[in-house]
Length: 127
Image (cartoon, rainbow, N blue to C red; front, side, top):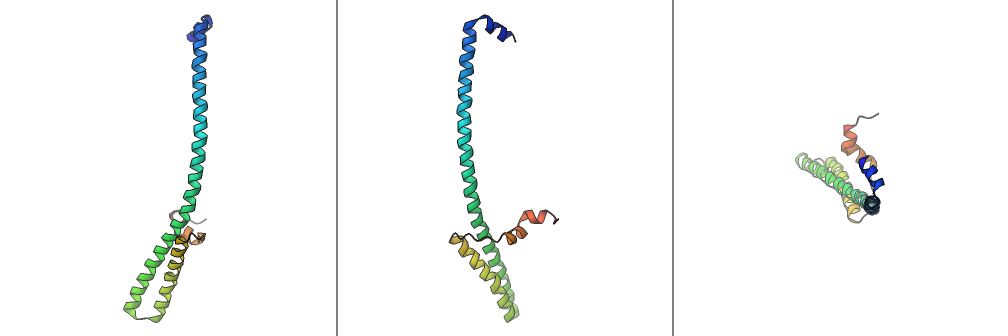
């Protein structure tokens, strides 16, 4: 309040205030432009992340399916059951398909299976 009263009395101080205000308004405008540019870059990065995340899920499913198939093949080796060998080929085939889909950038993503296996689905009870 005292500065405002003093500024009204002295034109030079008022001009200095106007210069400072203009300087800070220019800085604010510059920062707003930078903010918009960074926000656009962040949105583009988010899109790229989502595209790459699909392939990460494909490789994760491939690895899990192969691990299951190897465990089933180990049991087949111990029990010598032919049907168990056939059953082990199901996750092996799925793992091979998901691995090839990830490598060749196919846009296949089993959402239902991923939702069941993800932490979010496990932590939240079904409604």
